[in-house]
Length: 551
Image (cartoon, rainbow, N blue to C red; front, side, top):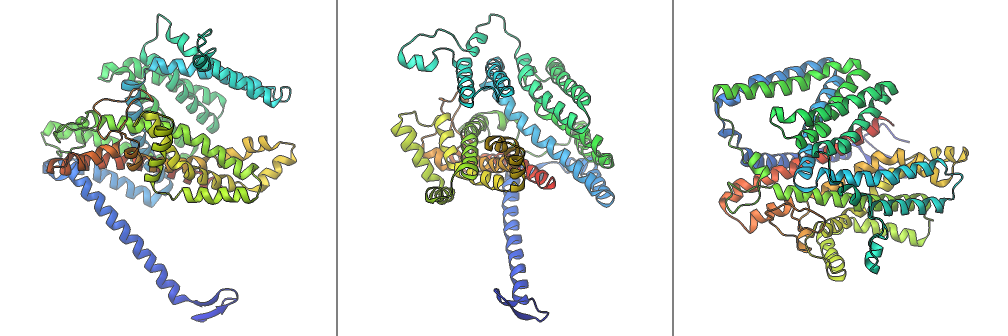
């Protein structure tokens, strides 16, 4: 039993000294603060070189101080004293606006320069048809054997995507008898406009999500109205975008990825939490103050900072001149790599986690696997680069430095992390929920699919996003597989050569080392890369906090 003395003996714990414990606590606090200060100073130093805020006219700083900074601080202080939840809601809306705009830029890059919206529509239809068959088979799950359903589902996806006999027939030298759905759709002589194709695919998905969100807050009728309004807004953006100087495809992307989700979140919060509506003053002051300040400095003729992170830097390719150098192909390469990594690592990692937690027996073999997965999570990234070079390039004979090889190598890098985080999320599901499901007559698979995975999904998604955040900043694996440090054009497919933002920054700091690149291009590239990492990590933090609040 604990004593009231300064020191004492506790059974099974030995001697307890409160002074030592207090000193240890403050030493840890000091170490943490020191690390944060050093890191913050480094980031400020790099951001100062990239953005150069002191090069702006004093009038520019004064204008934005009066229109943006002071009003935001005033509203924030008022809400902090009156309603902290409202302040949190307003800050979340502002953060969501910034993050969705960043992701909208990445998605717009894909559909403008890499993937045709009509081709995307063709493959979306090819996936939707067999998925409808899956839903129909699921309704008759008790009448149709499991293996029959699996076989029918596999065959439906194969025929829909590749036709008959498909790739198998190509290898065997058999000509195509039935073309796949994408081939049939792309052979249509009259095709819709690109922005219409994107509205039918991306816009329809976003509208469906908004409808489900509204239905959960109110009822099905409200969900249908909200979904229809979202789809009309997205289609209207594509039709009316050129009138305000935005081409149709980027307009649809901006509406789908940034505008509609942010408005839906703000409206949903205002309807479901009336006491927090006043928090919408925060985004109103921030956005309104930024617009008013921009108009004011333009009218008064004040020059802004001579930032290297500008539109030209984000939309230009590499140049031997630091002033003209840009990051556009590297940004596109990073996006394609992360998409490939997510497609390869997420299903494999989650599947392995489900098997190890729910199905695998507790024996020496599974314990051996557990130990090795933990060890693999700590292996240096360059080792995975050597593994990718040996397996994919040397053994399988694939071309070096392509999107597919780079994505597969980075997927191997983060696969142990995805498995571990997914297992932790699955393990956090209370066993009582599984027992209740079994008690109602559910099978093992039904329990996993309808009870365990929905409950663990936020944790799984959080771990996956954090793992992707690590992958997007890796350089050594890409160097080992022969990815080019510099590209002047965007990759157009999985077999195209690919670069990435870390590789581009590495090339600027080594191959093109000069004072201009060190003081201009390199800091600007680091700021863009760190901004993307912060955006990805912010999504993981929001998901984690939301999941914890629902416990």
